Length: 281
Ligand code: HEC
Ligand code: HEC
Image (cartoon, rainbow, N blue to C red; front, top):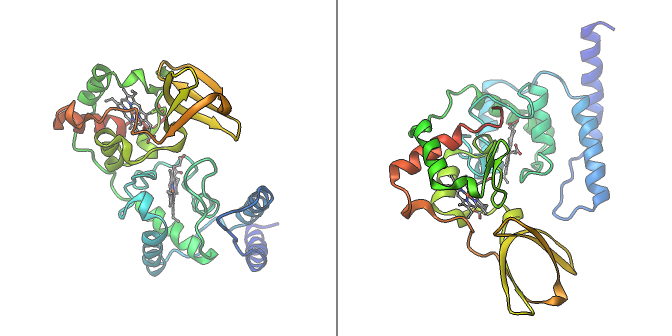
């Protein structure tokens, strides 16, 4: 088949799929719904055009408006990131081609906080066009000195709780790619107000045993009968709930607030250093 014919076929197929598939995303999907949506998502993205059909200046502007509604609370007004990844670097873990951006946005990122937005397919493409435009912007420059920040990281003892490229502790989240996952403002906030944005799997938990002992740690897992935590010495421990006198959740973060422990310059340098950690060594 020649290329033109192939494109024509894939556009026709996509058009017919677009007719059938109404992206249906609800608060409480059953596992079967989730599985069905994943299959539909694969099918729709596999047959989607390779090049963005909605890339005019007008589409990009509309994409900006959509971005402010559906994305900016995590990615920031200018896409520089926050709770979500910095989209201005032009580096993409999930691919930066038109088709790949469309796919990431359409399906969300399983296992992350990012779900699929409730918008129609034309608007998905407009969002992809706007995200692509963001990636062409010059990269966000951290004001601090990353080399100095690395020294602060090593001397302040961050590595007792955090790992970078396999080195360090496990009480806090792995930071090897934190500079790709999070934007500058979020990174700085993590240092100043660690309780502000708790990733749920590292929630602080305090257990009171029937023997009267209090055990602090982070929650790893929990069901109706038992709870698993990693205690502050780094040991995973499991408890039956009926053997506990109490479970206190959502403690303030186990991470110290560094605003009073480090100088403003040290915080700035540390933030710059964290921003360089992209998980790509
Ligand atoms: C609830 C927060 C949240 C919302 C809302 C959100 N995202 Fe994300 N997004 C994230 C996080 C977190 C990541 C990083 C995930 C990872 O790499 O594990 C991410 C990653 C991405 C990536 C992948 C970048 C790469 O490296 O490949 C793109 C593209 C993206 N988001 C676009 C969007 C768009 C467009 C919207 C709005 C339709 C949106 N996001 C809404 C949190 C969010
Ligand atoms: C006592 C353990 C501990 C120490 C010491 C510690 N942290 Fe944390 N950190 C945590 C925990 C636990 C979290 C996860 C959520 C929360 O409680 O904020 C976290 C979260 C973070 C985050 C957010 C990560 C993400 O994925 O969103 C960053 C960035 C961070 N820490 C950097 C640092 C730096 C830099 C230092 C040293 C100045 C440091 N931490 C020292 C325990 C610690």
